[in-house]
Length: 504
Ligand code: MLC
Ligand code: AMP
Image 1 (cartoon, helix red, strand yellow):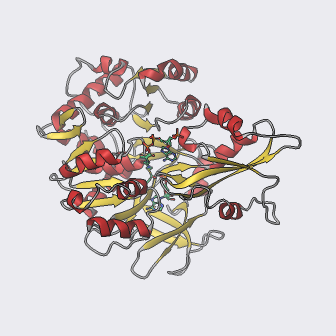
Image 2 (cartoon, rainbow, N blue to C red):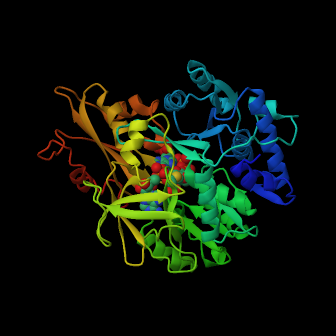
Image 3 (cartoon, protein in one colour):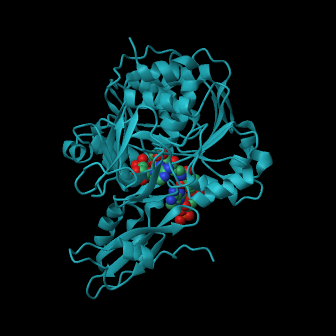
């Protein structure tokens, strides 16, 4: 019996007596982590979960939260991690759409999440950031070992939701092979070994923190300094014990803003990587000036895991995301016709390879729109490839804002704003933000006689939309600029409001 991900990521921990996870409250050995995963696996099967069932998980980052992922791999239960910032309304959509059999949430949110689970026929269990709750109680006293169920490379390991330009989130189906092959390629490309200590401050409900950071580390037998989230204080406290760090650009700009972060603190480090959002060439330059390190920038997506990466040994070019990773093909096509474009011409980035997902959960039409019959996935990012194969992302065709590494789809916010009394229509845009890269601005057009007030709009959407998606600025104006086809010209709005968050 084989179970590719469990065999590669969890089983090898069983014999490890050294620390796998170094947390703010103590250390957990590889064996301890494997046992924790397996006790959870017994709890899940005890609840009646079967291979292929979906488990939605909205919990704080902790060793136990990662072990629950391990339990999903062991039992063949499809892991569906959710941003802890999502409101119960947002969670309800995912539970219903995925037909989840179980929702695991924070005990503090049980009162609102349990009814959500019940409404859609799912069970509910609780687990908090300290690893306590009803699910931990069910796992306590269960055996430390579990016979992992058999899985094929093509079986689903996880579903990660990613919003769409229509405002409806789509579940990207990721297989065992997608995740394992990508982790192997990254481990090799970035030279990870069992001597590495990864400073892990990313959330584990997205590709970056879960599949890039955690999978690569589990695969190569290194250690993780596993912290609940990012802060400059934490980074400075723990960097001396680390060899590598992965972050979104906001991590790096915040570190550069801190005078304590210097060459002495980072000189011993082997690697800093960045992704999930564009790293300004200026940040790359400042980082090198301060630390002597050139950040290694890579490019990926929920649907594709990692597709390109600057080289470990070769030239790490600021402002580029590097060449395609081994086993991945990247091509540039005409966004209108889909025809491949000559090298050096900007166009749609399309990606094919072991890394590309299986399709959107129960949305064959959406899958067909974005995944071509020849296997190329249409990313929605606009880029150009130079003669050495380096990809530079020059823009996005999709209407998407990336704020602090989180994706925000304007359509989702516009639909909510347009429903509000006194609002005729709205346009939501992203403009430069000194901390988050892009910040959300809502441009509101009042209905005849209406007088929408930002504070009221803010209050009206607050229970329906995660805080990080909520506009950080509202502007009321009479009309939206439109082209002759009637399409809102967001580029003009972005230009008009580009200084909204400029630091004085
Ligand atoms: C928090 N806030 C944000 C925000 N994060 N607003 C916009 N964008 C964000 N990313 C808001 C909160 O709502 C709050 O608002 C205020 O900022 C402070 O909240 P906080 O919780 O104290 O924020 P902080 O802990 O500082 O978080 C910032 C951050 C975090 C950058 C550390 O957002 C983060 O960890 N981002 C990483 C995202 C990530 O992992 N992406 C990977 C996606 S995978 P208020 O108004 O209440 O004060 C992917 C594929 C790939 O894209 O290629 O990797
Ligand atoms: P997500 O859907 O959350 O996985 O986000 C994927 C998107 O993040 C991509 O389509 C890109 O637009 C963006 N992205 C990821 N890495 C980078 C990068 N290094 N530079 C620019 N954009 C990036």
